Length: 192
Image 1 (tube, helix red, strand yellow):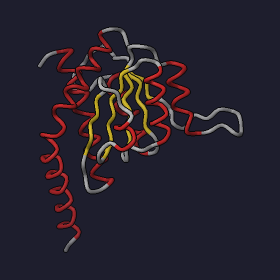
Image 2: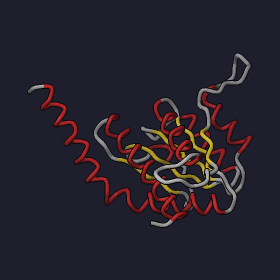
Image 3: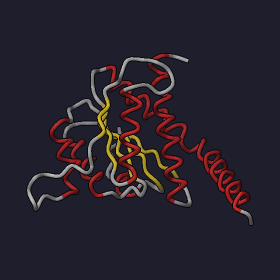
């Protein structure tokens, strides 16, 4: 198989996985966008977190809300939490970094978007639990069955699970989900 054929095959794999995900993801994405708009309209904020590769997804989502997705609009209140932030103490537990930020800036009525490819990132799980302690609603964007993050959700929370055969395809679905959330928020705020 030539490299060109291999690349062509990978594109087709991506198209197939996205086509298969449409039915599975449309409803939870719509519920999550509605929850986020309700939060923003009530002067709440969306806190977003992820670890490792999911940290860049969290930054992208917050940036698209702060600035714009596809059409001009006022900036929306979204904050990407820094999974690399560490306390000055040598014995600080890096897994507590995200939950400390939720404890410091999260408020009742805010929404936490917790992103994890595996659904088991310990820092993201701690942030989720911290958000519940602050009476925040949570949206989980995770691979597979959502892992420990999905298990820790409350009834009013939303889980968006992307079932893909590889980490690379999971990341692609997460990017599509982030774009769908931004598009859905803009649709609800600005109309078609």
